[in-house]
Length: 422
Figure (tube, one colour):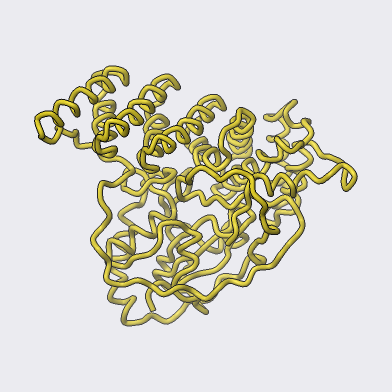
């Protein structure tokens, strides 16, 4: 599956003046929503009205090459809100914050992941920009992706000020420079922060002193019992690895706008800079979910543990890049559920799409995939009741929950299934 970069999307969305009349932001978003068959006319009209109100003067800005980079991000946010049945006003609010953050130069991939927190808690464009740029600075400073994502999550949950976020950010970068274990160091910082006894500045100074003293004495620093969204070590080695799936045939399409394929299920690395790109490709039109399949001895043996693992995450909040019961994203949910039962699958939804076999009909344990962004696989779930078409997934606004595949928003964006275990 190719990746649509911001530059390529800009070329798609902003054609030369000689080729078409340049549209403003509202016209561009309206055209994209008009082509989305997942909306009923009344729903589309309500969302467009909310966008027009919230974007106000920003909505009449002409979509030039710079603003075109923000359009795919906004479309993703709008689709995610509708996917989770968020009220139009909230959806427009989150999309506007993302648009403003993009106008401040924030990385589009990071904004896409972090902005989804706006469906749980109101986040200003300034704060969204601070978090997005801070994530980039953390990863550039060699702080692990999941630790960087967890700082954003802690800041969101605790309502930290932008200055407190920056204090902890530079403390983590300094910890890496001093060659402290980054996850131990983050656990110390975040664990004591959540105790509420002292602020980020004093915690940062204390952490550095404690870890330096432990190094000199060749002892291990005392780490609080912090339960974050990162893990210290991978799960035990699995005993089964599913084969690669057969290649997916894709159609080449020319109609813009298409949204960027950045799965909402992982904290991405910074994007490479502009380079020549191939023509965009998207999946074929949504497929009708197959009927229920017969079971097999392998899945019958595996299913009780697999089902229990998946359901143990019910109610866990969606966290960008999260991998634990404190916070998790959609592909970590499926990866963990299988991994806890000694079956190894990839971390990201687009890679999970490439494994196993393509079933003719659904059964419990099958992975099912959705296109929430207009450019291929971006969300994954697991079937838990094939007869009634129920699946478990990580919703950006409601956390881990069970949903029905017959619901309009899921059926409209359904791409297909993969069978991990024969």
